Image 1 (spheres, rainbow, N blue to C red):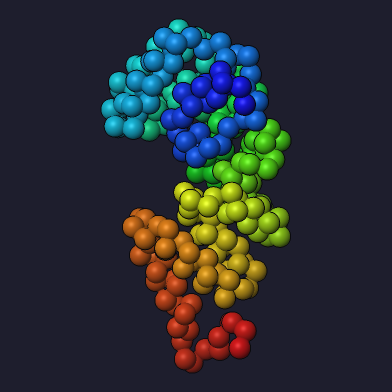
Image 2 (cartoon, one colour):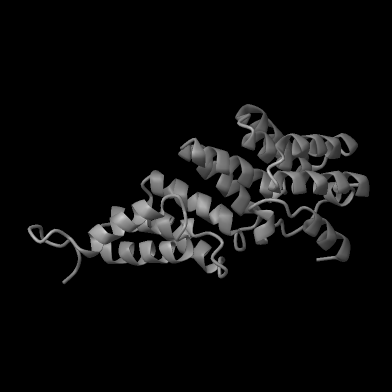
Amino acid sequence: MPADAARMVDSEGCNTWTESGVHTPTVSVTRLKVPDKAIGEFQKACSSYKDKRLPQAEEHARKAIGIYPDYAAGWVLLGQVLDAQHNREEADKACSQATTIDPQYIASYLCLADFASRDENWDQLSKLSDEALAIDPVGNAYALYYSANAEFHLKNLADAETKARSAVQLDPWHKMPQLHLLLAHIYRAKGDPHSEIAELRDYLKQASNAPDALAVRTVLKQLESPPQNQPSSGVQ
C-alpha cells in the first residue's frame, strides 16, 4: 500500500472494525483528498468518543465532515456517536451516507451490519455483510462474522459454520470472542454437544468478564454434567 494510503488508513482507526485491521484493499481518491484539518477534527472526535464525551465527539465529527463533506470515515464515526446517544435513525443515515460517498469503504457496511444484527434483521444483515465481503472476501473477519450470524438465523448451518470458522482463523489475537459463542449456537442447532462445549470453553477463556459469562458458565455446567436420569446427547 502506498505511503499516502497507509497514512490515511492509520488516521481512520477509531472503531471496532478499523482498529482490528479491517480495511479496504484499495484507498479511493476521495479518501486520499481528506484535508489535514478535517483529520484533526476526526481524531478529536475519536478521542472524545472513546472517553464517552459524546456531545464533544459529535461536535468534532460534524466539524470534520463540515470541512470535508465526502469524509466517509467521518460519517461512520458520527454514526457511532449518534448510536451511542440512542439516536439510531440519524446514526443509520450517517453510516448510509458513507456508503454513498465511497462504496468501497468497508467500515460503513459493517456499521450498518451491526445495526441490522442488533435489530435481528437477518435478511438485511446478510445483504450488508455480503456487500462488505465483495470488497474484501478473504481478510474481513467482521464481515464473515456478521454473515455467519445471518446464515445461522436463516437456518443455513453449514454456511454459518464455514464462515465463522474462517473468521476465527483471521482473529489470532482473540479480539472477537463472540465468534466462539456463535459457533456454540451453531453446534447446538446441529446436535453436536461436544463441539458446543469446546466453543463455550473458548468463549469463557477470551471473555471471562463479559456480561453474559455467568449465563454461559451455567449452560456449560449443564452440558458437562447432564442429569443422571436422562441419557447424554453426546457420543459415548
